[in-house]
Length: 428
Image 1: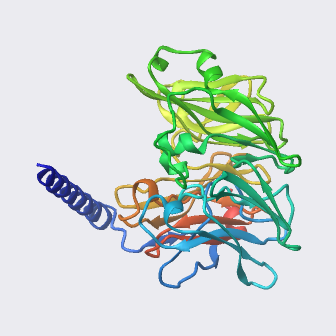
Image 2: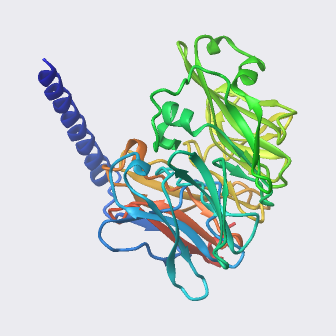
Image 3: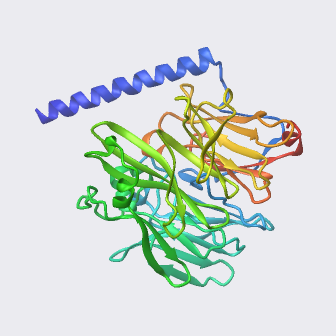
């Protein structure tokens, strides 16, 4: 009977994959008539090519962290290519440094705690040009983070994993990566057993790490969140927090409170002071996805607006919804971030039926506010689905002249860097 069931499952998977392939081919080649694997608009030029060596995958990770320092050096991850969704179980991730002056790329560290979507939370620390911080795993001690001075090779271990780091590098906020591994494996780590993790518990939540003293304390628990303006759909549900992001001035943080229960899946967008006080419910329409800070007082997020439709919405912290952003132009979920000068929003789209992901610039200010520019479209092969999918996760350089994306339009996962020339910005 077991073998019969296994054969049935395999046959269903085959039929599903076959149907998905036929649907993709028809939509791409006959309906949209897209014959190239990627398209870029005038004024966008690739300047750094991924490693072409067979079996090598490169990527950076999430959209709200910049791989660049102020000198233009770039950090990213590189690993043996794999379709296995839980990369941290299989391979070390090499942390690479691109030197903008010499053009050389070298390995500067390794980590065992990473995933395909957010990497190891790798980033430059506190605006420094020589210090990086990232998550790692140490047998017998668990998840932690490491700070490395790339000039002196001095290394410091923080006894806790980071999630979001303040712009001055003084502190970080973190959450339970074990809970994420159980409830949202795309963003979790799998280096140790999670079978015994009690995800029904409400004791964990968001904690603050003082990076100078290596001390950590909880600022908000899941129990507190369930007691803060509770709703009926929380009854019998399991809870988690995700996508914590500290404001540029380091005073406030936003995060998503999500729960799954008998009535379905729900998300609300919340903000708080970085000590856990001043908790505020910013959006409770049921669906909130990716968000970004627009300065220190405003947030742009893709969510169900008060109209009942899904849009990018601008919120003002501690007040609520202000306006829908580009109502008729951007109606699908993506990963937004605002340029250093505050004029542009960079975002993407998930692969459509033709497996093409779009890359866009939206003008936020000036006479041409609302102008949408398509920077390109990039093909994502069918084999990259689920936990090991490839989202563009576009991110800005510090000077706003370069963007980096993770894409598999060459047939394998790669970190691509493009220069945005003046003619792109002249369109708005």
